[in-house]
Amino acid sequence: MIVTVASGKGGTGKTTVAVSLALSLADDVHAPLFLDCDVEEPNAALFFQPAFQERRDVGQMVPQVDFDLCTYCGRCAEVCQFNAIAVVGKKVMVFPELCHACGSCTLNCPVSAISEVPDIIGTMERGRSGAVDFAHGTLNVGEPMAVPIIRELKRWVIPADPGDRPVILDASPGAACPVVETMRGADAVLMVTEPTPFGLHDLRVAVTVARDELRLPVGVVVNRDGVGDSGVDDYCAAEGIPILMKIPLDRRIATAYSDGVPLVAALPDYRDAFRDLYAALQRLVRDGGPSQ
Ligand code: SF4
Ligand code: SF4
Image (cartoon, rainbow, N blue to C red; front, side):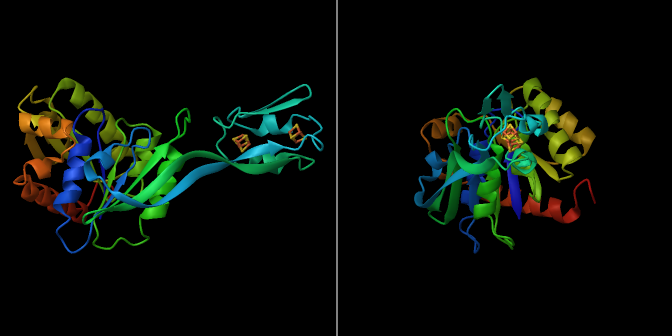
């Protein structure tokens, strides 16, 4: 089962939950696979301390103009929907940070003056941490596009048929394109939120993406239960979204997090609760999401 752990906002404890879920399943027959897809700020490796075995660059093909052939006709700029190539007088300028590698300019150049060259935007690494297979991607500083790295990371690491193996994807916070890409292809989405009006607001947005647009089953974990109000409970009850786990506000959890210690390593009694959480997700998937 592939589970994406997401949250509408940062600071909800999403990575704490994702890491603890993977570690709690690590004793079982099938070694969990953990992907840190928060490629702009990957931090799950701090908890896993994995030994990396493989590293790959991630790039995309961007246009390169042969000025001996170019007639400065402007056709490439006309067909580019992303303003990633401009023709000004006797100059053709390419802006790789805007390019979506669609290949349209290359196809449409009447004199075949455009070739495609790789532009490295980040890296991926995979390795092992105890019984967990770990992988993450890292977007190079200044690069704007996280989605190609997430897509490549999933393609590189997730087997075509994971079978019974738990695959846990830790998404970036929010509900933008990188989160959508991290959710795409998952069997279920686990939303981590906090019981405050801010948590509720961002939960609603993230649920819209996961459940209403991607048609995925959604379960909720309420972290720091006991602070705030009953808004998240009321919303989930009204929407028929199951709250699968509540983690109370506990100073020991916050201290462990700030020390880089996973929740279930600091408080091993939580392992059973996370195994129960995974079983509840399996039932949620089996019973069907909103598309069934
Ligand atoms: S379409 Fe080709 S020939 Fe025309 S400006 Fe662009 S690169 Fe030059
Ligand atoms: S590959 Fe596509 S996005 Fe990139 S410059 Fe060419 S037309 Fe624009």
